Amino acid sequence: MKPINSHSNQKGLLLALLLVVLMTLSACAGAAASSQTNSDVTEQAFTLEALAQYDGLEGRKAYIAVDGVVYDVTDIPQWQDGLHQGRFQAGKDYSQEIRSESPHGLSMLSRAKRVGVLADEDDSR
Ligand code: HEM
Image 1 (spheres, rainbow, N blue to C red):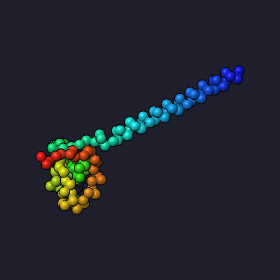
Image 2 (cartoon, helix red, strand yellow):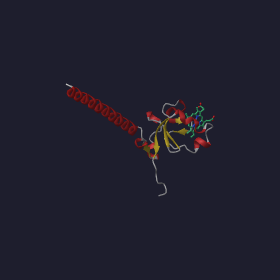
Image 3 (cartoon, rainbow, N blue to C red):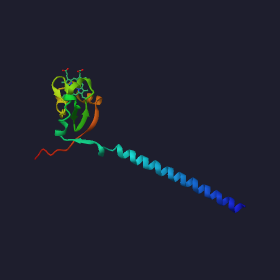
Image 4 (spheres, rainbow, N blue to C red):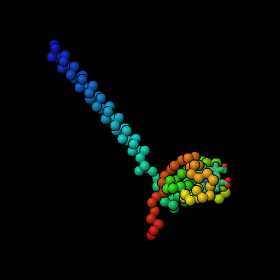
């Protein structure tokens, strides 16, 4: 009787161990998959030409770029129809103007959603 009992106990232990290993493995796989979707590699890169399509006019989305980052200003009241302060149309890189022309500087960018980056363009050619 005793040998049979210890044998079935061992079996139960092995099964429990297998379960723990499987659960750990699936947790790791899940973490790996989610870290992949959060990675910067998947972020959209815009050329200046592509950015120009997002001018906010005629129902188009309004994007602006500052310091290589592209922001969505479509739903920001001060950027209605992609126009800000009557003179800045969306679809452009405003890294200089946001510093030299605006009283608020970079602080207002936190109101906008980051949607991508500017693509590296070799303009030395
Ligand atoms: C997420 C982006 C931005 C947001 C949320 C934002 C928001 C604002 C707000 C709230 C004001 C105060 C006046 C008002 O209520 O209408 C303002 C003023 C102004 N902004 Fe922006 N802004 C942004 C980007 C820019 C950029 C990129 C520029 C320059 C290219 C700029 C230039 C100015 C100027 C010139 C004023 C007027 C200051 C004055 O004459 O009193 N802004 N902005």
